[in-house]
Image 1: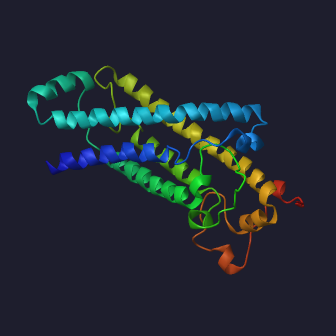
Image 2 (image 1 turned 135 degrees about the vertical axis):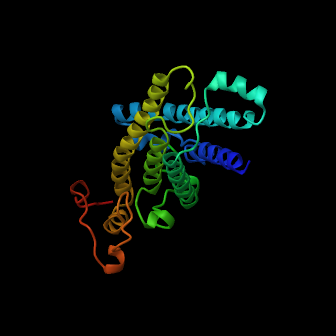
Image 3 (image 1 turned 45 degrees about the vertical axis):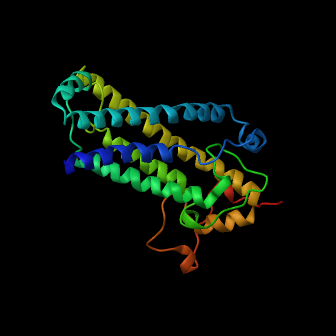
Length: 254
């Protein structure tokens, strides 16, 4: 009984964590706040694609987790479990790989939550700079310049772990193993693509923030890495700094 309750908790928290990390804590930015980033056709196209992918993936995660929870609950009632077996296929135990992926997803979501708190109303899923925007350098932003992207890339890695091979609770296993593999490959591929997109997004944000904040951003970027914290030798404590990337070394003027 305890094992079943724990498995239900893992499945629910897995879906909830992904949904929370993939939902903006604030309304979309106004158009005039996004105008700084609206000049690139390829960027606008990529942003539109990402805005559609997020809800789709959240739906997939909730459906697959809900189906597995239904199986676990129905398994306690033999007449019902037979019907569920026909509909969803056999139940699958949460493997070590799945549990590692779950732990990564929960950790990444907690980091995202700290980013939501640090930025407050300035945090949106749109590329935007608000009229009263300020350069936040506290909380997770004192460790890396793009902690929300780092967290979501980590979250995507967790999603890929729960969908590698035949791991995890998946729908349609009774229909065709190939269909299950195709579904897993789709989730892994989309997660990898969104992670790659965040790398380009970070470059664009850095350029816009440097243009807006100038020397303040330069001083911050000297000491704070982009994605991975430097826990083993903080340059700020040692009085050292990395050279700025070439595209950011031009003289800034207000």
